Image (tube, rainbow, N blue to C red; front, top):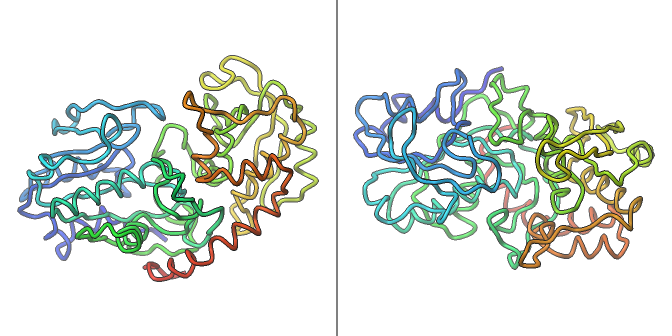
Length: 387
């Protein structure tokens, strides 16, 4: 079964009125393509009866050529010649002057269904700016690669809000980008003139391979849907001195460090009998990032795509097993300002402190389930697609 994306429906007769005869802004990147791999930016630029006035790019840039965390300069798009404004540099939202030249703002970027993916907040901050300027905001909906069912992980504490987590939502929230935009707009008081062009044919139970759509990596270290499947839990390894596999061909699917015994770690994790995943001892040498050029020892995750696989639980099981096995070598990473990188990802310091105090992953799971109760009720209001 093939899914018809919001960016494809934009050009239908009953929808195109949102952009026809208007000056259009588009927040997008290389993942903003349709099922035939045509970029939404290119289609809008070539279309008659509208003017693509400005492009806005998130982290990694309009065409996805920058690594994570690298500030992007404003310039022009090489393909269309349209001015391309960076929303990942000195500022992270459109200016009043830029919005004054637009009649409507579109958003078309593939996300991965995880709270700390920065594209969510590029969208939400642009919604705030458009609400202030009175510019309608249109989200071209796309599938959640994790499906629309799984809700997992802790709720973000607003005291730890950052660009990798602005709102109190769980790690896996089980919504499409369009559904999430509606929730942000209503529950967090953004108040934008929001329109979502829903997909056709998508169901909540779908994983990416069920959609019939080609996978375009939305960021450099998200090369395959298998990477997305483990990312919600394995990304937390970034907050430690263990390599999360950046600089290899399997980022987030393999983790390790020179001080780890990968064979012992694989045996320890196998004994936990976690559903939907198996662990294989590996050796790898990152080309960049942590331990660049050094041999790391650890494990690779081999997952099934069944509903039983719980990525956040698995990620924390791996992290806790490494910490238990290597108490003298394992460290939490801190920024030059003394802020724990892990706490920014986790949206709290409670998890790090609990792990340091010897809490089990099962203890954390119980607390997280309690935290999510209100969100799970609120979420029901924004579900647009069937199971």
